[in-house]
Length: 497
Image: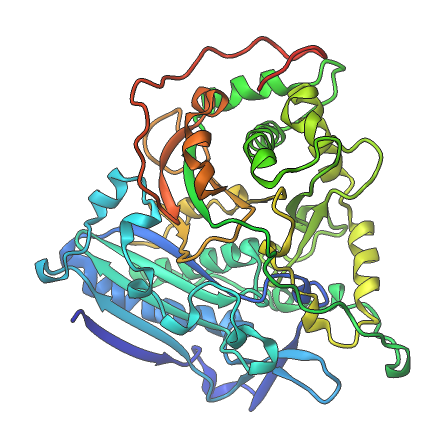
């Protein structure tokens, strides 16, 4: 059995805190997933430095929890049906230190994980690295009515390194709120190790009032929709980890650029190709009507779109989902698959992104206010129809740039032991020393379609397959498959697949 130490951390200076503090959930918090998030940071750490790193992390967490106060305690419901993060003076947060670095533990070394691109399937059973009751997934204990614990942390020392697993309820933070918390933790850790002044913290980072619209009288409230369930037609899926080199991303963007001079981003280009490839193979599997349209969705960080922008490290969920409806101009399945140039699909994605504004966000919140039980409004990504493609872009987190004093993360991964069908994740580039190192993508793909997607000509042309994140299957790929030359610039008559 690995050696474990458990600490129940009080926030630094808790003796002087009020007996109880509460932070009301915003209406945006209710619209996110009702799960725990498990973000794991991978570090290289010398054996002799591990005890001092463990001590520094413990002290840094105590200071960070005194700043990110909403991570301490539980989510509670009041007599009006509203929920808050409730922190009491004696509230603690669980911090586990686990040692998996002896030969008897048989755990991969830091260098072994780096050679395998830190792919999550290389880690074995992720519950070994996790607080077992807080692994990812839609479970009853995540309901805000169940008084869920908000956060916990586990530091796993492995041969030559450290895996720091940070757990929090999704109601507490979206990925950018978590990234701000990571930077605060890193700066606190740096100040302990380097004996420098601790970082400042702006209390307004905890202010969610901007995203709480005026409530309506009880007699005017209405029942919301039933809580979403997994779509019954979905097939079991795998999560595949791909690398998109910078040079290939530039080629792909050139191919997907509209001929009318309008602008698209690199994100629009690779997202359009992913939508195209997945739709091509899913359509026969699900017997999709080619003249019909399918769901495209993306999560958008709204922080830079607000005026005024607000606190730099604002916590909470400040994101908005852009979902393609039945509006004019939405490409049909046939157009997404082949009948329209890739530039048309990329331009449509850009249009969806651009129309997601602070005004549209506030209109959304106004529709939330009259709902009696807002906890039923959470998004469940695998409740969408099988042809759906949902993107979440994490490139702005820049986690590998955070200096903890003992080093910067070599990589980070959200640890999953299950696949949320239809969800695709974009990670920022890692610091590998390769100037062509680009972003990494986790793509959800039905297990019976994995081999087809991996052998697809367009995927081979631009993407490098790095392994399975979750839902691994046995592969016998044709080793002779090699990338093809880029196709000519798109025209109205050009078909890519």
